[in-house]
Image (cartoon, rainbow, N blue to C red):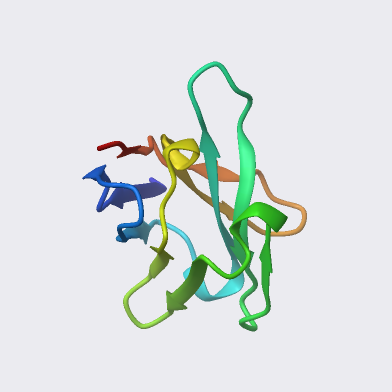
Length: 116
């Protein structure tokens, strides 16, 4: 059974930082591209960042320079370091695992609220 379990969300003030984690099980983690997506209030789900099994990263323009995605294949975990958070970053953040030719997997999400 595949599980992607996000953690690390919470309430943070504008300008603050959070580090999200996503622990994967039931997949060959090292073969998957991992990603973070988010869905804000009243908005559609959007890409935040992805990292390939080779370590190549890709970011949405609004996150470049503020967010950093990384992975630890030994721990089957992908991280999202978020700095200089803004109220518009408030969203549920979802972990995603995908591999060519296979159904993508999603976590249940973790809520990040940026507010003073």
